[in-house]
Image (cartoon, rainbow, N blue to C red; front, top):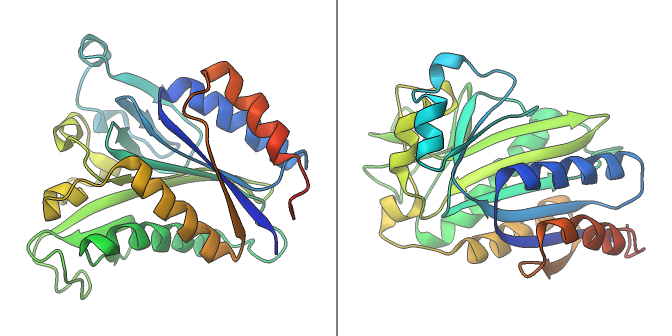
Length: 255
């Protein structure tokens, strides 16, 4: 069985993590490393995807800078979103060839991984047609019978991916204990009719990002039918991560 290498990075700024992800993405395309997934949380940042509209960012750059919130344009799919502490970030860097080369199926895989993280906290969740991401019912968090039956649909997790030559980057952001007030600075994913939620806002429980990352890594490995190798790199500086991951991910553990 092939191996999925999962790296927990702790809390990291977006810019340096984006550069790390891009470098590993290119290495995966070149066949220099096997499949990896980066798991972490970000310092506060607003990011825009290829489908973003300028009016969906409701605060000026000066306002964001004054409050220590970074702004980055990315090459992922989707509109505008927010990352902040307490939110689980999952960046799978996978080669989907030959048997998983299906964009819709891959997005569904990421959705199921997020579901597997929130389910142990008593949250039933699902999808809404034409609205990518993970949803729950704020009025009845333990029940999801579909969007038609949900009294107060709220978005728990966002998905924005980039796939080139069937190698993936970016991924999902799942609100665990995130301060949801930061979402007031944007129109999240361009969706104004529904609000956002977190595990904490729905249940009062506050899972750590480390806890959620472990659950997500196991869920992704299960979905991909891979063995999992878990490594924590929270003590490494930004400049050390790339070489450390490349060195290990190039080793032949069923890659």
